[in-house]
Amino acid sequence: MRRRLVISYLLLMVLVLLALETPLAATLASRETDRVRADRLADATRFASLAGPALRGGGAGPLTGELVSYDQLYGIGAAVVDRDGRALVVSTSWHTGRDTRAALDTALAGQQFNGPDSVWPWVDGPLVVAVPINDGGEVLGAVVTATPVAKVRRTVTAWWLLLAGIGLLAVLACVSTAFGLAGWVLRPVTELDAVTHEIAEGDRGARVQDRWGPPELRRLAANFNHMAAVVADVMDRQRAFVAHASHQLRNPLTALRLRVEELGPSVVDQDGRAEHRLALEETDRLALVLDGLLTLARAEREQNERVTVDAAAVAASRVAAWEPLARHRSVTLRLVASGPAYARTVPTAVDQALDALIDNAIKFSGDGGEVTVAVRHADGGTALEVRDTGPGMTSGQLDQATERFWRAPDAQNIEGAGLGLTIVAVLVDASDGRLTMHPGQPRGLVAELWFPAPAGSAPAAAPDPAADADPAADHAPAAGPTTPALPTTPAATTIPATPTGGRAGASGPG
Image (cartoon, rainbow, N blue to C red; front, side, top):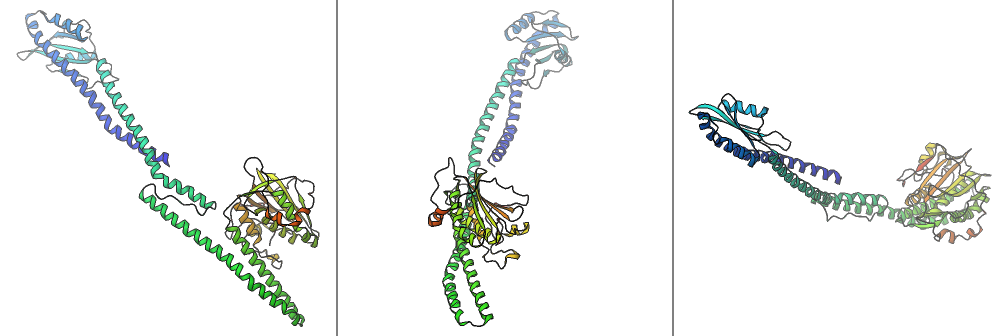
């Protein structure tokens, strides 16, 4: 943008200079030519006054000496001809040419001749002046001079170079001023673009300086800051409401469950016991929904603080934590890792994301199923893959898997709130990572998390709260043999951005 503005200013300046300096250059050339022409006309007129008596008397008289001295002193050739065009007296350097013949013809016709009109730097021909020699109205002959134009050309060229130098200085001054002016005009726009990018990356406190630039852009910057503040306030209020509502509903929900549970012994009818059991299940389901909403609100309020974690160690701790549940459901849960794998993420992103993915994988694999958690280095970062042998999902279901509260049609009766994968998508996006999913082969789903690696050499892993809090982490199952990453099928879906009631990817339909 700045370059285009400078070019437009420069083009305007060049056009103005051409409009001003071109007529001035032509005027200077014409003025210098007229000055020299006036001198030559005066000299030719004096020679004509001397040649008149000589032509009437039939002799050259002192005219020959005058022309020779004039030629030696000024280097200008001159000649005197009679009415028949015969040269009577010529100077040393005189020579006849096409220009001199045309000048003599005009002078013998009784008119003065001078040409060319202006001497340009590229003109080589002489400046020819011819005047008639009159006696009582009768033309007796003519005097013609041929002046070399080298000196005139040098003078005109010097004037033109001076004009070009002044124009160049003006152009340089214009460029310097244009860069400063363009910078002053575009500084608010550039800063607005940068701040917009920062806000899009999650820094809701970024603002534009509204003290620079034209008044219109300063007003635009102030209005943008006001809009950003209003949007940030609305988002904070919305998330605070979700968090507060989820938290405040927990106590009455707990009390309600206790009261429903206490009704159990008083229910003796078989149908009543079934309804009592369903009521307890619904309160448990509502508790899961509230917990998911609270976790989601906390995840979305993250200010994108980054920590370095050993993803392999976190994966080992989460596998160890979920091993009892997997064993209870007759699901084989194993870890494939080959040493530390460091990742740069927001706090608890890896462990929360793995919790949601492993939970779904165990839930949908069924008796005799297998769930594999693999950690490897990939694409300059760290990838964590959760593979299950469940029923899988269609491509249309994969597109909807991270919509809040979405459940697959065939999973409506399976426990879950439909928020786990939404939280995973939020955490992954806040960590500048990505969540990818695709059908497994021959069945099941594969969900892959990718997080960027720390800058420079891999530092020591930052303490992970989940690993420290889980005593079962010390008893993680031994990593199985390292296996190569399974290929991604063409139906794979990658979720690059935070879902807004939208998509991110999943490891299961719940």
